[in-house]
Length: 348
Image (cartoon, rainbow, N blue to C red; front, side, top):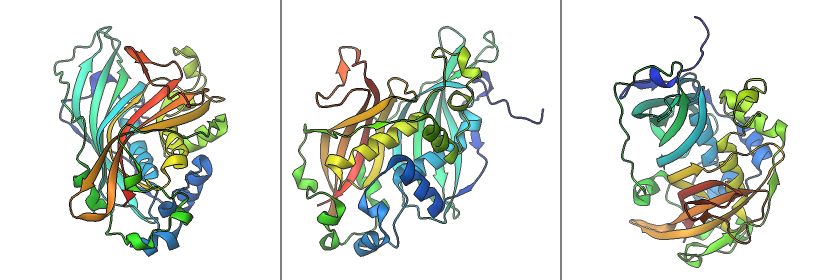
């Protein structure tokens, strides 16, 4: 065969390394299209002048644009035949990425677990994105539910990895250059609220909502070269549980992050992803809202310029988040579509 049908669950081997095609040079055009799709307004990623005044050589890519490009490389080899992307852990953004850099991705299979119905299985991978010099810019773990080609196929090696519940923000703060805090203009950044203004337990309704159109989520997923069938093939998805295309879960993450600007405008950099779960699917025509809770605040050794906020951002569909929808008993409020736990860096 000269075409790639994608891997099925029984095709994965514990411990194998997968080198993904194709390297991707990110450009200012990618940045502009990302901004057009999601509307993020964080000043450091929006303005070269603002970023240079702080100590950056230029405005870096939005962290999630880096994430999506690195993620997109993995799809043809990991999740082309996936039914769902289930979760994330141990994510770390290790260095800023600037337009003109070329990114590539390698994944290691760190876990396999067959489902009880023997129709599917969960594949755990650790993916690492590197620049053209081989330096790690991003690493993360994710697990996906993948179809089996043959339900009778025997799986000889099964293992569920134990993953850290929280990454250490001090290990990730080195990714940011030393910043000139005196040059951080809160008026231009859009909010007066800095590290000391946030308290553990504080809940922030981000107020705004974004309705997702069919065309934009298709464009976004193609921008990241994500080829998963469930996002594109309307004929094939008629046979699935929902009977229509699913919106890429990363699209929801970027929407929630962009919405979080209203309340967290100065939390300009994502340090790491502690945990993430796509609770329910999103479809074209749905409207996304979001709210965040401050889970922890952290001082960073050797950094008097920034602190870290551990945030839990929840996205909901078709329901404003003034009442902070979240967990309900053993499950979630029916409106919840994303539960993301991450570290963000913010000036002191």
